[in-house]
Amino acid sequence: MKAGKIIYLIFSWALVLVILGFIFSLSAQDAEESKELSDSLVSKIFQWIELYIDGELIRKFAHMLEFTALSFSLYNAIFVTWEIKTAPIISLVLTVICAIGDEIHQIFVPGRAFQLSDILTDSIGAIIGIVAYLIIFKIYLFIKERGNKNGSIKTV
Image 1: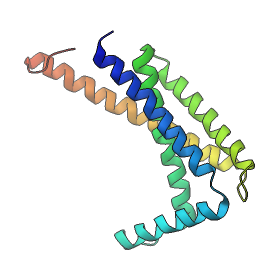
Image 2: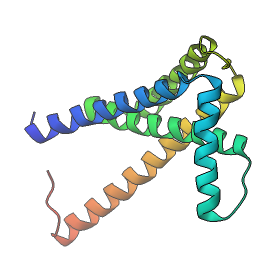
Image 3: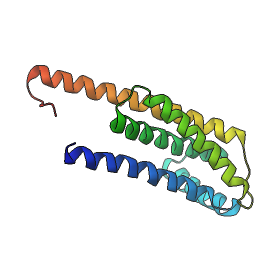
Image 4: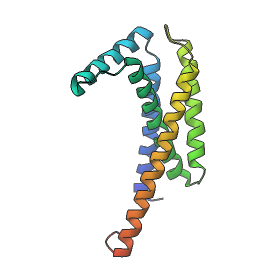
């Protein structure tokens, strides 16, 4: 295996771990800390775009975005490690398991609770991440193939 691929594999799995750590750290905040962080972020966004959006909607969107990033990075790590066609399904299943684990974790955090709606939101985020990866990968393959036909891009 080439050194570049090994570095890419390490980076891919490290990114998965960083995102998981980020999700865990946000879930470990008690209800008051979490609300303060969300409200602070929401007020900055409102000032920047000069538009009012419900804070709860922002929180749901942020939750979905976290799991979009997780499924995207998991898909990438799984695909580059094993090059299997079931990578999207495996990354979806693992991301949903992480979402369930995140909600179970919140049972033990003061003021937080297990919410099925968050698992659904996270699962939607996971699907978005997988679809985004598939689209970006198809674009990459198209550009690579087109470049090879024109002789301007070398294959690795």
